[in-house]
Image 1 (cartoon, one colour):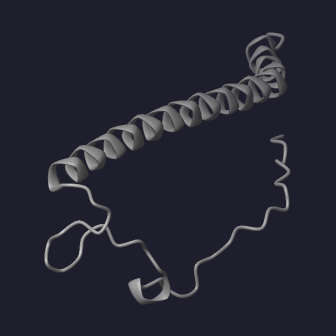
Image 2: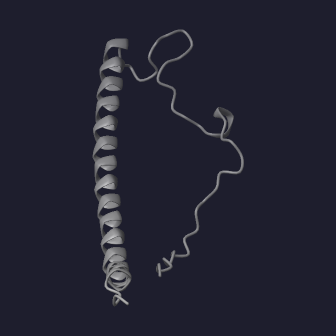
Length: 103
């Protein structure tokens, strides 16, 4: 018999209204005329963007790798537990079916 897995009572936030650009205030890096509001050149901004993109991808990869290892461990434990619980019954049933006394 399979065990029922207990799920913790976790409240998951749900986005009910989309966030639009008008709802938040973001710092403006460049003005409409193309000049940098921060005093950085376009090349400096491109370097910063590339570094942020690279670091974000590295962090995402690391987090996904960690999540996959956690899921693999959880699945391994679930399969091991089910085998431990169900295998003896399966073996007993097969033995009983095949080792019946001959009439």
